[in-house]
Image (cartoon, rainbow, N blue to C red):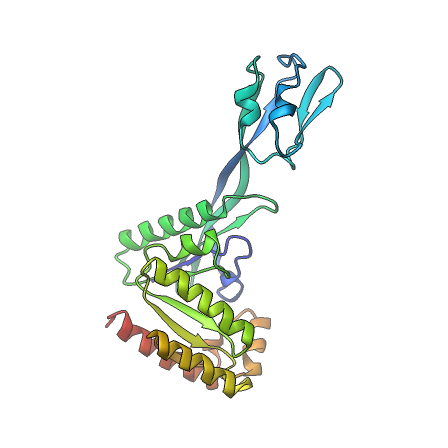
Length: 262
């Protein structure tokens, strides 16, 4: 098995896998404008076309605020003196690590950087190539929350997406949204209800909704303080006996059937 944590804004799978980092690679993201002060003629065309107020006058020349710059390159094309160039940014880092369960690919996108979807795709591609090289039977991708670009990149090419929800109104709402995204991209799904016993009524409502949508519910995890204890010690919950571990074993059996794994 090969693992990939593609929540590049807040990767956390490694917190319970005790990974040993084997490789570290830079991720170059979007570009920002940079003005050559010696070539700048001070005409102000760059400031006029910048919609983000990122270009400021600095005496007789102009400069770019790298925080405000969105990398649209309008100033670059407008400059009559060719004094502006677009510079690639060191936007993050991606890693290859070894764990007790197999190789782990994950990444860290620096604060304020964009192109998270691009970094997600990069991590997934590297993990997939490793799975092919190792003849692994499974590539398990831990995706980010929400329904935005990083989530779409994480879903791309999946054989099945496991949606983890909780028995709350907001949990049911968010589950419906991500199911809609997966359906749009024709990704088969399954649902796992976490802390299901905290509201049996809401868990039942979620199960009824899934039945209406034709989405299988593969398990109901109970609330168990042992999960917190395992997290505090940096261990997977499956290393501890208890009701959650028992249920997760059943969930995995259900998923193996859906994925046609032996």
